[in-house]
Each structure stands twice: as structure tokens, then as C-alpha cells.
Amino acid sequence: MSLRLGTFNIENLMTRFDFSGWRNRLRQDRVLQLFEVGSKQEYEQLEQARLIAETDDTRQLSALAIADADADILCLQEVDNMPALQAFEYGYLYRMVGNGYLQKFLVEGNDGRGIDVALLMREETRSGQKIEVLDVRSHAMLTYQDLGLFNDELALTNRPADKIFKRDCLELDLRIGGRPFSLYVVHFKSMGNARDNKDGRVGTMAIRTAEAKAVRHIIEKRFGADRVGQMNFAICGDMNDYQERVKVIGNRRTGYQFEPVTEEASALDVFSHDGFAQNVMTRRDVMDRWTLYHARGPQEQHLCQLDYIWLSPALAEANPSAVPDIVRNGQPFRTIFPPGQEIERFPRIGWDRPKASDHCPVVLEFDLS
Image 1: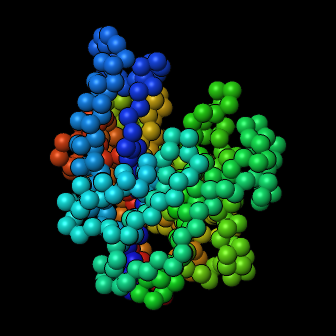
Image 2: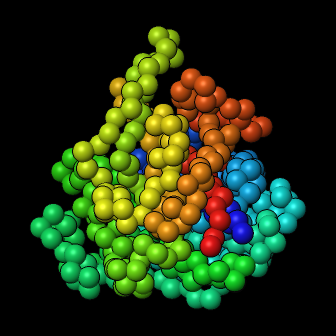
Image 3: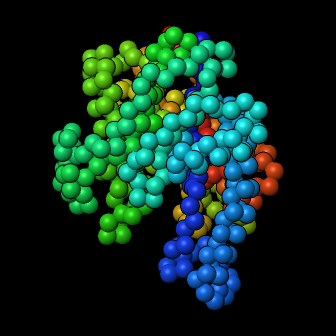
């Protein structure tokens, strides 16, 4: 009995307009900076028109990416609220795939911008197995002191009573074709807003490490540390960290070179160092594991995996040939692909936008025993 499980940071699936760019130019969209805007009212009208026009293209492309992933269960990140999820699923995704995701789950989390983790589920798998939801639990209220995770590194930017998860760890107990399966959906702290202008990834790693430790604690408490390796579970989401990356060297005129680099430390070592869970993306070639292209000019470019499906040891062992698919057709043309990985983009993809998302959907088909 197979299950097709996916994860996708859909990038700002919002129902609200952000007019803060009127006062803060750094938050103003670049196209509006090209024009003289005489009043706040005029700015708000232009920003509404800009975002509505851009969003229709973007969400058509997001829906195409999800349709190509064709997951039975899809974990999402950066969803504003349930009305946004319902409107997108019905108005865009349903029109693309013809059969919708009738089961939807979202719990408001801790993110200051209001972006949450969510799930879309079919009522049955593609192979006809019933998908039953037995329980849904949020862990958004857990604090560092609750789990004894507070330390000196965290103390630089946090307090003991602060929430561990910057969004949430959404836990679902499922039964698929009569077989138990537990799913944990996360969106870890971003690599931005580091203290004292430090490297963003290094400066925020302590927070993500605590989030990973908390996820592991939740799972071990649920099943027992001595039995966890025998259970059917997966951890999915945008984890905003990587254990390796592919450096992109060069520019459009001179051409590009690609250099794999292994990081000395990562928050995700919490999952991998002793085999607690397996990142099945490592079954792909080292040059072909990326889900995001990062660039700040030609001197800082790399491809990396931020989006993960971690399988429990039992599921990984039972599915040795299961390899994730990555849907990259929604990437903008500015994304640099290593040789041999070029794909045909979706219609209307632009140089930087419109695009399906800055992230790529990841989907894995595996058997539940």
C-alpha cells in the first residue's frame, strides 16, 4: 500500500494587503519605487492592484506545481489562514487537478506575519486506500523552559519563557488503509535577522537547533525513545537549514561552475547524527538535491535543500528504493540549474516573477507496512 507524501513552501499565501511600504521604503515593492506616488490613498490603490494582478499568475503556477507533485497528503508552509487555503484549493488547485483536497488542517501558530503550517489531504490515496485523521495536535505553546532547552546561545536573543517554535510543530495521527502513520509538519526559524550583523545562518542556528530538539522530544515522548525507530512517522517542512549546498561560481557572461560543499554543523544534525530519522533526499545525486536557489549578487550564490521529508528508520528501511521527486518547473528563469538538470518551465514563468514559489515542492512515494 503506497502513500504519496509531499511538502511545499507556497510562499505568502495571504489574504491581506501590506501597506507598510508607504512609510518604510524597504518594505515597498520595487515596481512602485519606479513611480511618483502622491498620497497614501493612491499608494494603497496601486499596491492593491499590483498584488491582485501578480497573485493570480503566482497562484496558477503554485497550483501547477502542486498538481505535478500529485501528493495524497501535502504539507504546506506560509499559509495565512484557513479562508486563504480554502480559496486557493477551490479556485486554483481544484481547477488544475479536477479532484480536490477535501481534508484541510491549519492551526494558528506563532509567526509574527501570521504565516502558518497547514495540510491538504485527499480522502483516499491514489491507490484507493482511505486516509483517516485520528487526532491533530499543535505544539505552538511549548517554551524553552518547558523542555529544558534554554542555553547561553539562546539567551543572546531569547528568554526562557519564549516559544520554541517560530511557527508550530503540527502533529497528526493518521490511519491510511488501516495502517498507523504519524506526521509532523514544521517551518523552522528563517536564516535572516541575525544579531550584530552576523552570518544569518550561523546567527540563528541555535533557534533552529532547539526547534529540531523539540520535534525529536515530541516524537520520543509519544513512542518511547527505545521504540521510536520501529514506528511509522515522517517529519516534513521548510527547515531553513542545510547540511550541504552547491556553490554557484560565475556569471551569465563567463559561465558557471558548481561546487558541492558539506557544512561543518547544521541544526538538522539533531535528526541525522545517530540515525533518529533519514533524509531520503540523500538518495539523489549530491548535485541534484536542492530545493531553493539563493543569490545576493554573483559573489553569493548557491543551491541548497531547505525542504525535507525525514522518514523514521522503520519506513526508510522498508523503502530502500524510494527516492524523492522535486518539482522545479515553477522556478523563475533566474534560477541557475547545473548541467543536465534543465527543465521546461510552466507557461508565464518570468525572470524573477511570476513563479510558483521560491521553493520547490518535494514529494515521496513509499509503502506503509
